[in-house]
Each structure stands twice: as structure tokens, then as C-alpha cells.
Length: 245
Image (cartoon, rainbow, N blue to C red; front, side, top):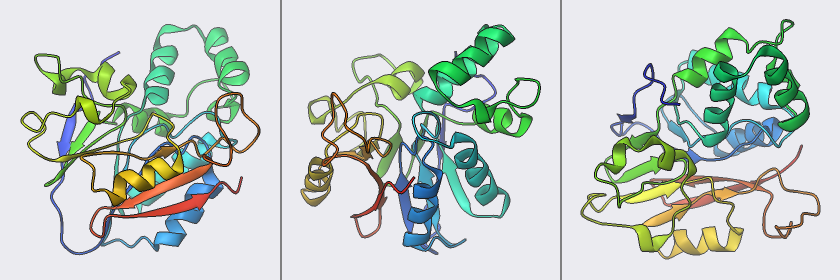
């Protein structure tokens, strides 16, 4: 689904009045997200960039969406991107009948709180989700949920890759990306790897540490995941908040 009501991208200038922060893959961890916002002491002079996947996995996707909308409505400079989980939700909402969509949210994604009394998405959530672009360009950074498929003729129009692609340093092309650092989420990455990428000033920085994974998991070592990560773009430092749900 390509939502034509949403721009593919936005360019955001540095307002030079506050700090710039990037957070990715909140995944329904509302208390953890709020604690991280308090930890960075977000002000209305700052710019906060969110890289998608606000819903699913964690216990309270609705409150995550409500809090982002609250910040926006109260004149915080919040710029939110679309992740694959938001895209999947919108596709299901349009393509499934009511019963199938309700079953998906209650049984599969386990996010029944996103439904109203008529088993529909609340209008304010629907409008927010439909407004989300696929990437943000800054002065020295590209921000995206998944990545860019740089083998495509126009990677900046390939929205499926922007939300679904798993990328690494080998995919970086300085000519196409103008020498700007690429910051992404989507791919759950060990906290040590994230720290190493930042400390080594890598051109590709992952920020998804699997915030929702705090119980024994068949794939991930819970000692290496379970943090919500925030990158301070100006000091290029990582701020972490352990899952507190």
C-alpha cells in the first residue's frame, strides 16, 4: 500500500535552538518511551525524530500513539516516520473485513486497545498513521525505518524497502546518500553493536535494540536487547532506557 495522502519524505532543517534526538521501534512500550523522554528532558526547542514501529509486541500501543499525538498537539517538534507495523496495520484495515481485522488485532498483534467500541480504528489514530512519511532528510543525516535499496533506479521512491529492508554497512553508497549518515531501526541489533557503530562514527547507525524483548526468547539473548535507544545527533551520544513495562 502506498498512501498517496502521505509524502514520501520530508526535509527538516536544524532549528539551532535545541537538541536533536532520534528514537526507533517503541513497539507498544509506553512507560519506557515516556521514561526515555523524561530522561532526555525534551523541550519545545528540541527536535525529536521517531523512526516507526510504535505498535505491536509491547503492552500498550494505544498509549504510545496517544503520547506522540499529545506531544505534537502541544507544540513539541516531533517528526514521526512510518514503520512496517504501521503499514501492515493500514493495509489490513483497508483490505480485511471487520471480523478479520478485529481477529488480527486481538489474536495476532494483540493490540485490541487500538479498536473503538465498533471495532474500528479511532479516527485520530487513523489520521496520524496515514500522515506518516517514509523517510526524513536532515542536513547531515537520512532517517528511515528499514533502509534504501540502492540497487533500484530511484531508491527514494521504493517505499517497501524503506520500511522492510534489512541493511548493513556494505549497502552504503556515498554518492547516492550524499555522504550523509544513515540512521535506521527495524533490525534488532545487540546493544554493544549499536554502541560500537556510534563510537566508531559509522556511516550506518542501527537503533533498534528490541525494546519489547525482556523475557526468554528463542532468537535474542535478553541480556543484549530490551533497551529503547535514543541517539543525540548533536553530541552523537547514545541514551538508553531499559524496558520498564
